[in-house]
Image (cartoon, rainbow, N blue to C red; front, side):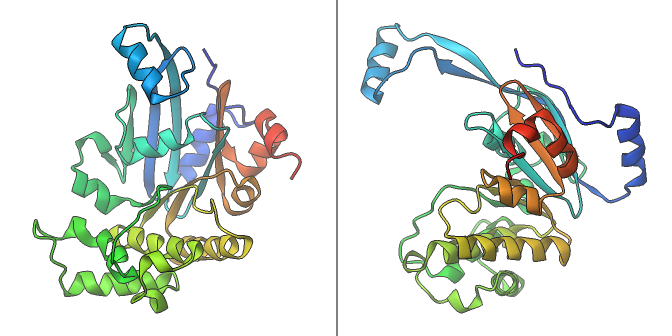
Length: 287
């Protein structure tokens, strides 16, 4: 089993003192979170083979510990980058934050509240979330896609009020997508879609933004444009940003703090501490 340790040069006492000096509000506090999945012990080539093996009771499972005692804190104004290899548990952490996956152990606190005690609507109003999955709305203009972020605030009928409509317009303007409001969402570029989806996330919450691979599939110009928008949201709007990404160069440039998850352990610390760590030297040293 991997040994999960923080390999940064600061010890526990120094970290406690640093935390005591930093009086910014804590947006996310992840306390010793663990998650375990059951995985098929043999490689199967198709869903049909899987179903046959399962029916014959020939399919064996083994335990895969995606996260093991992971802890970290994100404060107001932080940009928090989550790095690691494929299958290491990066997206698992995000899904635990937004309550898509149940925890085996530990606690996630969102804005000071135990996330397991929050309703789905309360969670949605706390987190601005933009995940990787592509949406394919039919006959929807960009304004309507962004407006979907306001539904946690509406009643059961989902009717938008004047304040909701104002928030939608503000969010589109904030990400420089107001000119896309009346465009068909399926007829715009990938970079423009990311901006509209970011506006949808901002319609739900304006203090904590969670992103899963936000620049995947974007060309260099669209990537830089998205990072510029995120930088504005963080520096001017004081939003905390948690971002899972394979874009190592972008993460090291934009983030203040790094969480690196690997099969042999995990690291949490500043960018400088990360680059000085074994994981940082291996994955980021060539940049």
